[in-house]
Image 1 (tube, rainbow, N blue to C red):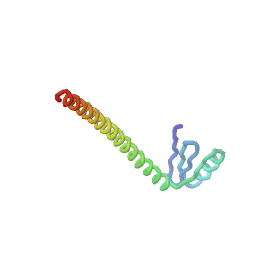
Image 2 (image 1 turned 90 degrees about the vertical axis):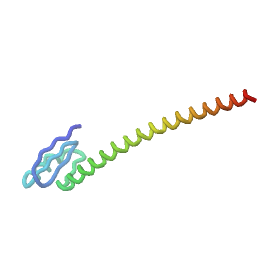
Image 3 (image 1 turned 120 degrees about the horizontal axis):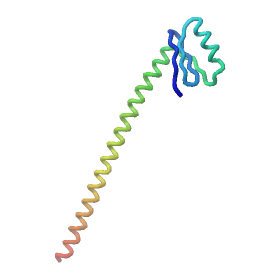
Image 4 (image 1 turned 45 degrees about the horizontal axis):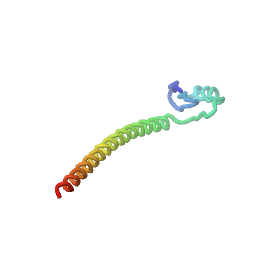
Length: 101
């Protein structure tokens, strides 16, 4: 669902993905227009800005954690491969030492 915006100054109205910001009589008009929508909210512009800032911060944090997770998976695969090679080398040495006796 795409978010639409009608920007003025003052208060912000959000309904079903649409965001309207108005002042004065525009506030009343927007409130009446959105009254029929389910899940409508009225928040101040400062609150909207704070929420948008937090959303951006959390999105960046999520991207960083996903990248770190991928790096840890790659490292885990490398360590597992080294362990398999070491076990194979040990088995080979063990086999050779049995033949030498």
